[in-house]
Image (spheres, rainbow, N blue to C red):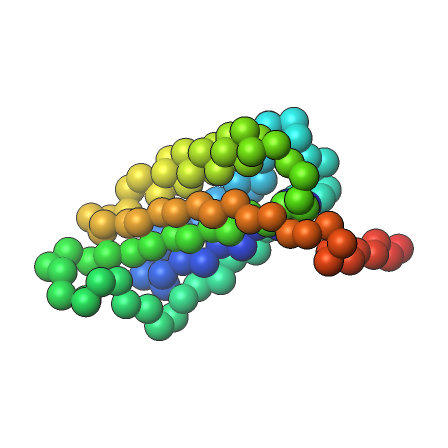
Length: 121
């Protein structure tokens, strides 16, 4: 933990996703709250999406991140985590080729009794 899922509008093709994911993981590591090898980040493009009614004169894009943690973290730690990831994404996407880009981060709790994990090898 944490598990990070990044969903983004497919029109953000200019973004170097491996680099963005590295920056997210590094930001989370720098908080000194999580073991480096427990941070798992994945990214998925949204091929079909609509922002608003699709009538804007300016091209729009989005990045939505869900950060999932086992229950029990202090609310202040979760807020610090969410704000840090948002700042990182803002700096990674600041030059979105004239697009309006909405970025959001949601920190979610996973009940510990409903999370199962094994490590093989």
